[in-house]
Length: 132
Image (cartoon, rainbow, N blue to C red; front, side, top):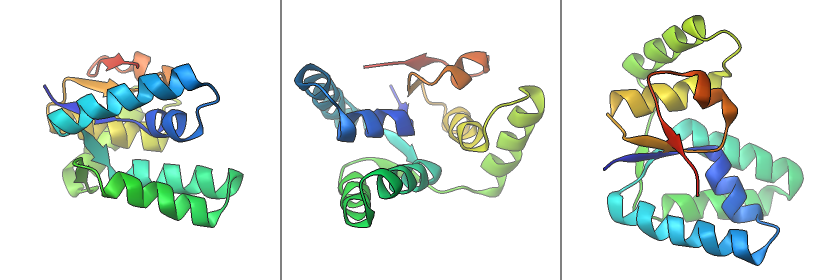
C-alpha cells in the first residue's frame, strides 16, 4: 500500500486544536512512516507558506525539517508529473494547481490513496482519498 500525503494532513497535525485530533494524526503518522508515505515537494511549499504566514518563519522552517526528517519519499516535480497535472487541470476545471500536482504525483506513483479531506480531490476520478 502506497499513500500520498496532502498538505491538509500536515497542517492538521501541526496545528491541531484538540488533543483527540492530535492523537489521531500521530497514530496516522506512525502508519504513514511504516508504509513510506509519499510527499510531493509542492506539499513542502504549501506547509512552509501557510505556517510562515500564520505562525512565523522559524516555525515554518522547523515544520518542514520535521517532514524531511521522517521516512517519507519526497517526490520532486518532474516533466511527466507537470504535464499530467496540467491535463488534470484541463479535465477538472477549477482544480487548484497544487492539488493537480499532488494528484498527478499520486497517479504516477500508483499510490493507493491520498490522505486528505480536501474536497477538490473528490472530483478527480483517477484518485481516491481517505482521512485520519
